[in-house]
Length: 513
Image (tube, rainbow, N blue to C red; front, top):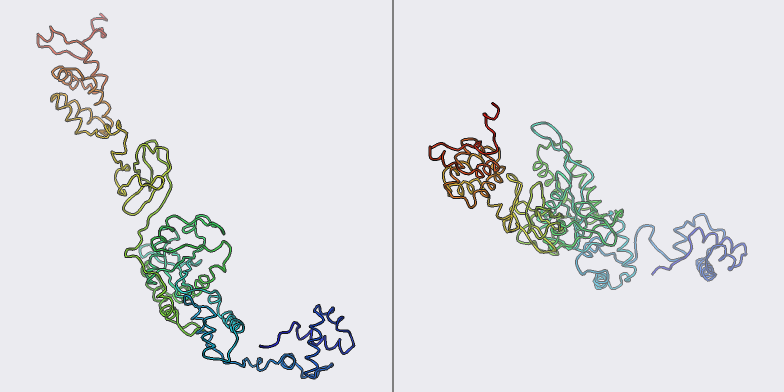
């Protein structure tokens, strides 16, 4: 192994000059800030190499390096031992369970006089540092996928109005193979964000162990180094595919350097190469992006020697988890408080819960088909999601007992009740309901009539109903007034009908003459 030196070539020249001027080794060490033993060691090397001050003009730094420390052929970039294929070793290091020790042992089996372990590791790390920033981080196959939205957008033209609407570009990069997926979505909102993940996993044909998103609000409710709060819907999607979510630290772009470099590279392939094309739909735009990504993934990577697709097939496809039989269904989670009418609101419609939960906070899960309501982790209500029609979706079992009775009120129910007394009463009920713009506004009047007819014979009720129809007295108070008047026997005997105004509280026209 080459000898190590603690001084620069400039310091070594200064050391030789001071020694020539008869300065002590202790003083030289003090001036250069190194130990006396270091000065003595370098003077011995200079004496053995026949170097004295002043140095000859041809004594360049490379010549001094060679004569003092025995390094040969470094200026030409050659080493004394057989070099392994560093690019192949860098690819092998990404396989699960492969370490530098294993690679070094295999190298020494093939080259018995090869590098020692520490020098082997230094050279391999040096090779990785000379690669692009994407390759500097160590990523195990099947471990992570980095996801983010590009800061640039792509324009899509509305064919009817000519208006240009800009779409977001979603980019995902697998850690080990750099296989890249991209697509355009209208927004960065939760529905588009999770749907892009589902299509991404379908493209990869498997799921990695971890998702590494940026701190986008659709994925992370609260960014934190110690305890980030993952969006509940995003977390449910990841759980469906058995993936963990590990957000990048806030303001730490190196945590997601893979996707940052992938985003820049994808932008050149998408925005740069597609800049002369005009798209009239999101589907048309995504078809062009898919073709561009196919060319990008099939293109050999510089210094690695293989394409992203080849590297993915070699080391990463088999390391991914298998996908579930069914794709995850988007479900939005939200918090809601139960109103006094035992309903919660979701997307402008009202859904009932048991009345005992009035004023309680509940969790609401909304999908395209159903609305589920949970209280303390237990599902307490489920409804078919409403898009049109009546705003209320009410389960009768959720009502208080008194409300359940009222929920049975319908125009048909009141008409059936009136027909049981007689045709005049049925006609009276029909007139009350028809007089209102909304039949429900007449329910309470009908209930008032029902209340007044309790204990009244059907004949008496029919007489009052007929008189009320004749006079147009279609209020509960009018019915009560007619019932309070005692029938006039003489008028009934003569066949005369009693009127609403024939009672003691009215003076009549003769009072004024």
